Image 1 (tube, helix red, strand yellow):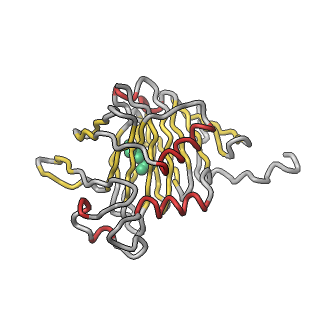
Image 2 (cartoon, protein in one colour):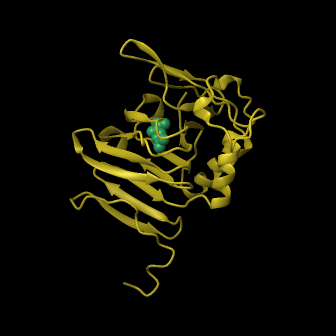
Image 3 (cartoon, protein in one colour):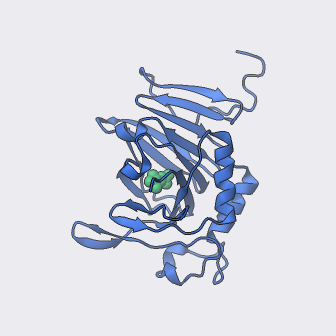
Length: 247
Ligand SMILES: O=C(O)CCC(=O)C(=O)O
């Protein structure tokens, strides 16, 4: 070990299985870990976004003309369409589950280049026009990775009861081996990855205020992911996944 090895290098805050196919290496350039898992690649930077940028994001995403965003219990707002949000067009989608029509357990919003529509779980979203805040985050990520994104899906988990079910981002429109960059703000939530052919093989990755996680390689073919409920979490978490959608 070198004298300066421990400086500016936070330990990886989750465990990688000791078995073959897993390894991690620190990048000084981007202050994060390149992680190889069997059939996929991850990049994890715990504090990719500074506290100032991350705090501003919380305000920006919730800012509206009706309420002081710091005082609102967003779960009490039954009709989100009537909140006049200043920056982000949040929507409450509905899904059919076991024959019932239910609200999606989170709010979402879709932004992108003209024409870049996105369909998942039977819901098709037309892109809102990019705004300066989202472009700022997009460019920060693009500068560090040799990739350009043309769209972003925003998820707002209003508290620990909001969640995301198991799925892979393997829609044809995302291409063969998509690179997807996940930016995270607000409450820490666990992002759980598990192998499709061995569901006991899991990684539990805490995504914190300011964390960036990039998924790439063939990950989406062999792994699925979820954000489970966490009853003890009372505050909001925002997740933005920057993507490339083909026309
Ligand atoms: O909230 C997250 O961390 C995951 C988001 C995600 O997987 C998705 O929107 O497809």
